Image (cartoon, rainbow, N blue to C red):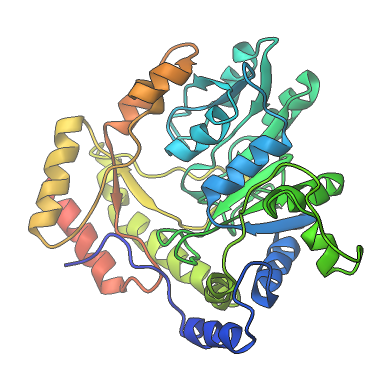
Amino acid sequence: MINFNVPPYVGKEVEYMQEAITRRKICGDGEFTRKCDRWLEVKTGSPKSLLTTSCTQALELAAILADIQPGDEVILPSFTFVSTANAFVMRGARLVFVDIRPDTKNIDETLIEEAITDRTKAIVPVHYAGVGCEMDTIMEIAERHGLTVVEDAAQGVMSTYKGRALGSIGDYGCFSFHETKNYSMGEGGAILIKDSAKAEEAEIIREKGTDRSRFLRGQVDKYSWVSMGSSYLPSDMNAAYLYAQLEMADEINNNRLASWNKYYELLKPLEEQGKVQLPIIPEECEHNAHMFYLVTGSLDERGKLISFLKENDILSVFHYVPLHSAKAGLKYGRFHGEDKYTTNISERLVRLPMYYGLPEVDVEYIAHKVAEFYR
């Protein structure tokens, strides 16, 4: 059976975890945590990176830093994971969903401005499949209306928009290091903070409302409770696992891109025949091959394709059910404008196996079976 996902593993993870154990420093903000944060800061050009226990908590931290209050409105796509919405719902915000673009499956930047009201506080673009949203337009709208931009870049590590790292363009950027992502610590994430003045506030919130980070840097002689907060720190053993992969980020990225490009090459004839739609990468974007998907002709066709692939020992999956159609989505938000593409595309999209180390022969077999299905 060809699995849909295999968590990345490069060989040094256990060695680095053992090193963390030997140091007798396995809680948060140990040496490997600092190494990961520094790597992210250098790679993205962000002034501050803080590892978190998940992208969900990175988004929650961003919502707190953005001072989201009950009754505030947040604009986001409905075609995303529940964490994007929950982070703001937990602060009492109302969700305003807008439609996606049919090419990138990202939020349609041309629909954002008409969804803005006097209650709007933030825009949350989601970089689907590690392909950047139209960030120049989004940032211009946000600046004109005085809004905060929180990038959900859960799938976007190593991707860029016009040469800028995803997650580093908005006020805050949130990454995921879940086992399904390109780089993994099992469960984990990170928040990027553009305004260095917000960095200390983030450290305090992340450290249970204490100034422990300042104490560890020798800036205060003892630490105390100074504000509200929670615990968002991952274990340094998790960070050690992640750092082994960040050291080999280019190799992992190139390997995934090779698989993605092979899929595209082999399946392009099906698109030319009008059988499926393949991913579209805008010229200004560099993606990270987070996923390879097809858009089929109908919901029924997608179900039959997934079943056919499973019969041939290939695990493929569909993706998000639009949030605005869910029970909680109806309770906490509304869809602004016409749902022209969100539901339609969500019912036809299928994801093919994609992971670091996926053998080329397997990519060829999968593509062959997809072509066989359409014959």
